[in-house]
Image (cartoon, rainbow over all chains, first blue to last red; front, side):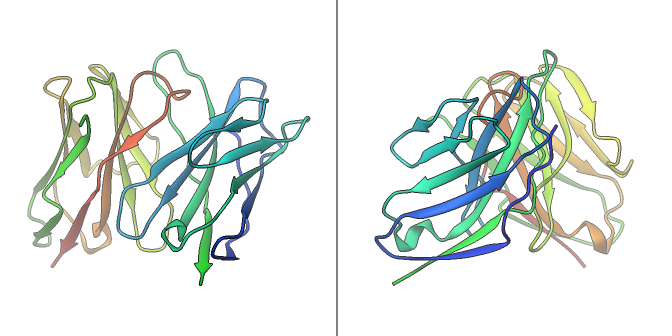
Length: 112
Length: 113
């Protein structure tokens, strides 16, 4: 699985958009980009994933560059409850079973 | 609601005393994972089951074993816990391969005295 690079920490003002970048320059053609977040002392929670098109759901938007070497997770209106560690993962398909390697993640702090 | 359940949420054991952590799922997913997460670190995959097929990560110590008696349950056995095994242990499931979303339980925090 490709390695990801994320900034260790970011701050965001409550109500503003939070843009979390991720570099995955060695991504392969069959690898998806997944985003999870982990609120303190809880299990990680799935946010969104994509292959090459931009994706949006009720939680966030995912923007993947055309060369697929980087992506940005966008939380459009951050709230204090969005304070968490955000993990960007690239994961290849395996017909037997799969695995996702978590990188170091970005600690997002949303401030009032 | 369908979910991943881990019991207990907190487990205290003694140095060298075997301990078992449990995970159950109501999602009927094929794949179950066990991760270890130490303080301020990312989750680290220990092993996973695809149905009954066990897949161990290359760097998982032999001290860690797992059992999956049926689709719903998976156990993590630590044969001789050391102080360095104190961590949060996370169970996750996915319907199929790694293109699938993983659903995590709340974790069991293990303390070794």
